Length: 78
Image 1 (cartoon, one colour):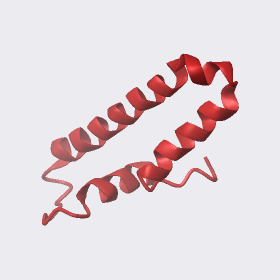
Image 2: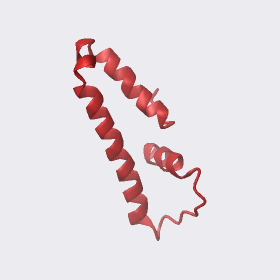
Image 3: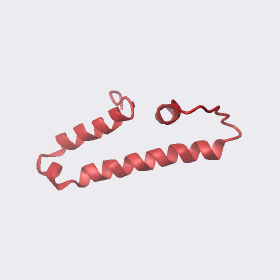
């Protein structure tokens, strides 16, 4: 749940909106699913990058951590 909260906060912090979760559950889930799908596509691109595969998985892990850092999602305990 913490990941969902962090993604939701990051994507809505600059928007002048009021979130009413019970009445907007579908929109809430769509926003989170969209962001998760986008991040998964970026992770897939990192893992499939042939240049990074030559260097081993350490570089791929580092770039995936950068991806999470760009979204202000801490990964230390994950």
